[in-house]
Every structure is written in structure tokens, then in C-alpha cells.
Image 1 (cartoon, rainbow, N blue to C red):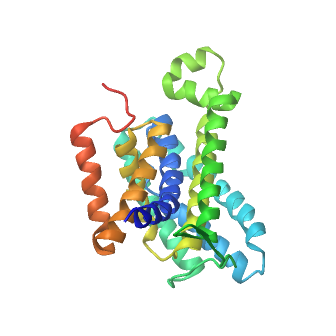
Image 2 (tube, rainbow, N blue to C red):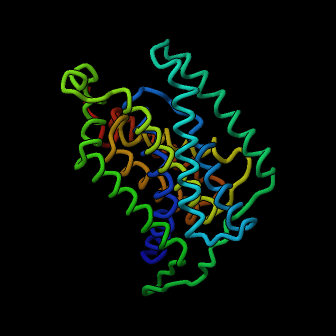
Length: 287
């Protein structure tokens, strides 16, 4: 029993890493700009689709295709901020909400037109399996977990240790005070969307390598991302990390011991129970 629990925990860490990256991208945009960026999931899957295209149609190695996909995704994120959200930044919140829904449908349509409607899997060539006692860890899952940890640590260091990261935190805490301190608040939204999209594209690549990418899958992952935000605590970076990990492990254990058909239901039941006990989320601030 213990071996099986550890096995499912390892499996859950891989998908949990994907949830964490998506949630960090969402919480960066929502916490700083107050935008519920529903198109984040579709843009993330665009990164996965593009990586698949570069590897299979253009013959690029996976390690060469990933930076190209990240750079392209970041450019798309910057365009989204400038052309879609910037015009409604100071309007009623419902305007940004409608823009976000429209963007979701638009990006999904772009994905369909550019990459088709077939389910695709990014070929990585990583097929070895490592064994630790009675636990088996596929090479790909191990690298996904390591990559997620590296990206999360890099994100935390950026936010906590760099001047740009401190400026972002200052704007999130108090925009007016940040302006008085000389922070260039006009550039912050672009930086935020660049970071958010990079994290999302990385998550999309992981999904494409671990599972598969298909039309509509992005919406499911963005719902999970917002669920993680609520579970961890809105606006909390550590909460997004903890919430994504908890959700991923819960899903994996539920699939292993009960049924994969009910893993989403069970994961959300756990989330609801946590919020009944702690409404502000696991690491959210008490009002």
C-alpha cells in the first residue's frame, strides 16, 4: 500500500507541476492587473502545438524547438496585452471579462486553423524507466518534475531578488505608491504578460509531451488553474505552488485507488472541503 501511495504521489507531482506553472501565470496576471485571463489555457496549448510542429514538420530537436516556442508564445502574450487588454484596462471589469472570453475562442480558432483538429503528442525520445525500490519513474516524468521545479525557483528568485520583480510586487501592493517611488508602471503589464505566457507555454509543452494536446483541452487546464488559485489563496505565489501540487497528487491518488473517471470530481471535492475549513485558501491572507 505504501509503495502504491508513493508511486501515485510521484505521478501526481508531474501533473501537479503543470498545474503550478499554469496557476503561477494566472496569479501573476490576476494579482497584479486584476484580469481573469481565461485565454491563458489556449495560449499555453498553442505553445505545445507549436513545439510539436517544429519537431515533426521542421525537424528541430526538442531542446531547440522549446526556446522557439517560448519566444513565440511570449510575443503572442505581449500582443494580447497591447491589443486586447490595454484598451479596456481602466474600463469596467466586465469589459476585460468579455475580452478574455473572446480571446479564448479566437486562440482556439487559431490553433485549429494552424494545427488541425487531431490529437497530437510531442515526441521526446525519452523512454527509459528508473526504478527506486518498488517505485518506477519514467524518464519523461522525472524531467518534467525537475523542469517545473527549476521554473518555479527561477520565478520566485526573479520576483523576490530582482529590481523588476520588486517593481512588480510594488505595483501589486499599491500602484499609487509605486508611481511615487519612480516605478515605470506602464511597462509592468507587458512584463507580467511575458512572464505569464512563458510559464503557460512551458506547461503546454509538458502536457503535449506527457499526455496529448487536442482542441478544447486548454479550457480544462485553465479551469484547473483557477481552482488552484482558489485552493492556494488568491494572489499568493506560494499558495499557487502548494495548491497545484496538492491538486495534482490528489487527482493521481484518486485515479490510482478509485477510478480515473472520478479523479476530477474527487479533486474538486477535496478543494471544496479545504475551502469550507479555510475560506481564504491554504496560504491566503485572512481578510
